[in-house]
Image (cartoon, rainbow, N blue to C red; front, side, top):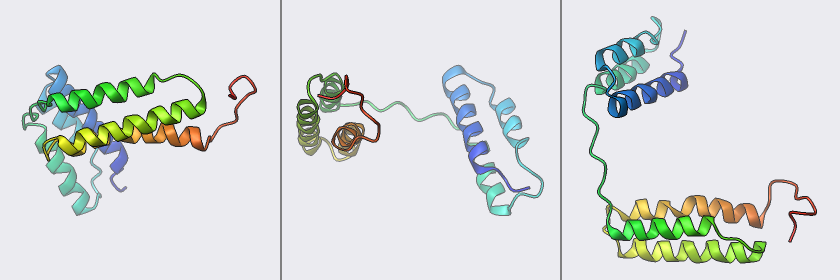
Length: 143
C-alpha cells in the first residue's frame, strides 16, 4: 500500500505541534509516525517521511520578531474585516486597506515585506466575494 501523503503530513503536523508547543515526547512521536509507514511504500516517499520524522528532534525556529510596520499592517487588516456598510462601502474599505498594506510593505525590510503583503490575501478574497458572490442572497441581505 502506498504511503498516504496527506494523512502522514497531517500526523506530522500534529506531532510537530505537540513537541513544539506542548513539550511532547520526541521519541514517542517519532515512533508513532514510523508506525504510519507501510512496508511497501515507495523509496522516495520513505526517504521524505524519515527526514520529517528525524526533524522532530530539531528545535523549533524562534518566533519571528515583527517590526512596528508589520503590526501596523496587521491593525489595518483587522480593522478592514470589521467594516460595515453597503457592499460598495465594504469593497472600498477593502481596497483602501490593501493599498495601505502594500504601501507599508514597500517601506518594510525585504525579508518582512512578503509577510506583510500576504495579509492582503484574505482581504482580497472577501472583496472578491462581495464583487462576485458565490452564494444566494436573501432579500434581507441585499443592499
